[in-house]
Amino acid sequence: MLDLRTIAEDAARAGGAVLTAHAGQVTGIRTKGVATDMVTAADIASGVAVVRSIAGVMEGARFVVEEPEVYDLAGVARGSLDDDFVWVVDPLDGTTSFIHSYPCYSVSVACVAGGRPVAGAVLNVPLDEMVSAAAGAGATSNGVRLECAGASDMPGALIATGFPYDRGAALDRQLRIFERVLRPAHDVRRDGSAAIDLCNVAIGRTDGFWETALKPWDMAAGVLVVEESGGAVTDFDGEPWTVSTRDVVAANTVLHLVLLGLIAEADRR
Image (cartoon, rainbow, N blue to C red; front, top):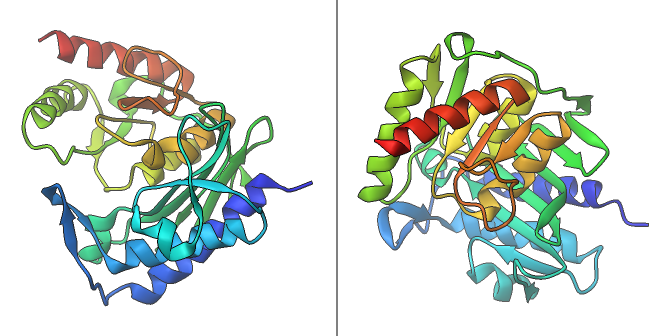
């Protein structure tokens, strides 16, 4: 029987090797829709490596990849988030960081069944840290089992977030939430990779994470890592995460409720 978690880990490592080879030599930079949303040759090459790794052990595998050029270049089937079984891939989460040589970017690979992740891996490339999970089997970081804990109140909590590419209404909303969360928190961090941010909650580097306007490839693997470490992940209304979720909150089960309350207060303003 195929081990989906191992397949995800191997694929993430394949993509990570490509990013390491491209680090410091960024080429093919272009924008996607807005000036702040960029893609590089490394994004594409990593995506090709990831999907070929999976396709090499799973004949007929279908994919949803952030960079659409990957399908034809790798010769794999384009899937849909509505598929019963599909691989959801972000070959470079943190492209802006990668371009600027800021050491926080990742490869995120998730196997999604029925709209929910069942296996996933996030490789923090600069740290060479592999975080992975499988449904019902727990989460690990470099093989060490994770248990989501951390602060239970805001004065002791280090919280992570990110900012949307849309610098209009979406940013205005995020800034309102940011102010409401920052005031009672110990502090807030912003590193630029939602996949890493989610994993850091499970690892215990941060106590909570929220962000708006994300895509499923940003979150799918990291969501499973948090859940399998015993943490809570929902949308801003407290509903369970699915591939349709765009606004996410993750934390230990106590702090999660506190963050939901703060976000609701900000949205009422």
